[in-house]
Length: 331
Image (tube, rainbow, N blue to C red):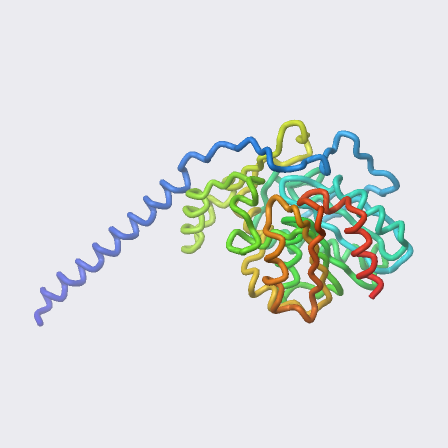
């Protein structure tokens, strides 16, 4: 076989590679900058549980905690007499005010002290609204809050708890063995990711997803390009009547990715601590009957229960929820 023939073959291969690379970037560009879909008018949700117009902090103490990068996160502290501290994380697009009743109730039981932080980029905390600097920064923030709990509050045990996307993030955190091992976890109507059988389309219309943009950014991330990660991909369909300056209207790609389990199946298989999973029988975002099935691989560590007349948002305000948590904490 002549050198000229091999040279032609080599050039042809290079041309094909170059053409495919160019096509790849063209596809990415088109998808990333495809117009985002319009928000939907959502009517199937009961939003009364997150009505912030009349919510006060009550006996909560307000604190700002410095993170490792110098940014400060706002949190409410509900003191209890116990050295067990619960870090209770809010759901997507909102902040910690709506968790007041649950946090106060648990603290009043004198069983635990409760912290409800506003995640970075949410509520009164610092950071770009609805965005983070890198995927994994939320875990770093939780590590810093755990350290604060131990150093400043004398915490001897840590419970990590969360509602909705906050619950999904709790699973993500405990499913990663490189993170600090906590003592117990509580997941209230947790979002397990769009691939999970628990999740209805668009989380029951809680969000409008820019699917094409998400795919385009994911394609760029596969080849190590993260320049578009700050673009918004999730748009929350929160009615204006329930929105104020502390709510977040959209999430960047990196925030959306970081606030959900990377692989819910693997994360569940990694559970080695006592966990409580509660979901409402009338949840608008999820299929309640699927949670017990999904958490079956970790049944030796996880107690799962469906609260019959409870929806997605009011689960944090139900007496039944608080009673279940208190009974579980005693065990």
